[in-house]
Figure (tube, rainbow over the protein chains, first blue to last red):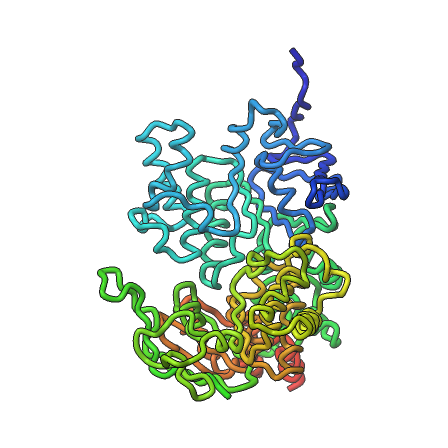
Length: 302
Length: 282
């Protein structure tokens, strides 16, 4: 028996860690002949601390979803290693533990809801884990309350709005008591209100319940409160830092087919026009404050 | 040349216990050559409305006139209507199916009964209109990127030479640059050909940047129908119906509250920049 087949965790390791992660897939033509190999993830090293809110940005095809699918063992590394809470995702014995600890929410809510009634859908995960009935109900209640959907527990999911469905999907994941939750563009199909609801619910999970969050999105405003941002390009981590550090680099982000929040862009444009504003302004409050200082109006008022 | 909706009502499951009144007395005039944004929260009736525009569903009551003719009159040629009012659904790339890009775009005009030459000319022109490079024409549509697939799908509708192009969230799921590229291309197309464009969108920033008129749907009725500046003045009411204004509008509002003399009916970054530079000098 090989005891040390999997690389053991060291004690300083974060909840999610990758070491030189590479994922390649073979492209084939219609007859099945090999056309070439695509390296979708290319030597990625990330380390996410327990309780962090981490955002992954990147243009379509940059490898961010492929990376995310490694975190709950939907995909396995071609080279390198991924650990979730110290478990090597290649270790088959740990598969269900990994999936329980790292829950995933996808883009389209309609593909993720199976129950006829909201509370049934949320109970599906813990039921499959063999949680005793009494505790299932308790978990369902807690999870639905955490995303603000408890009053809809008796409703049919298909009568809910997109944002509500997505929050039910999230409740379904947290009912499994994961340590981290990975959300792959959860707001892409939602209206402004739905987006706000989902982002608020995700932030609450992180702040109140201390669940580690990995959020993949194309909406820059959603991640201004993140602890850390990774920007992917061509399968590699192209930028890494706090939202302020990342959004200070407007031109670089644009070159990577990304964007910054409107308030950041406006400040950037005004700076180019000669106003003395700092880089990386993230909120309206911050912007008003610095602009009033620049215009000298704060002094006049007080 | 215009599309008129006259007292249109639509009820899903009429005569059943589950009847849903999806459109309530909708009256709209869509003249030639406008760039219109259609916004509303999920379930507000946008998609039901859009499906009325080319006769995919028939109003429970009320009428729709295209170029003065009632599209539900018994002798009306619906097939022709569908080539004149082109609908691009959400995630249209899921509807690509042919072996290569060019053949896929040919499918529509071929079914109109056009000659091979005319079909191919149209397909070529349409692919050019959406800005797809020649090198992709004979690739499988499935090997393209998300943004490219979506362009091919839009080209498939443009090849029918519609007078009105309706796009249901054409940028959902695309990265920011992809979003701008598609919308810039559509704006350019509108400038060059004078086609009417109706853009269904959840992005207030995009709508504010591109369109000249916004129709806001709420609970099956038209809540506002005006130029963006006027519509976004109602940002508080918009929030109540699940929408919002672009972030710049809120920025200007906040500056105004702090006493900076700036106009608050601003909807784009460029306008905001000019206003602030002016406001600071005062």
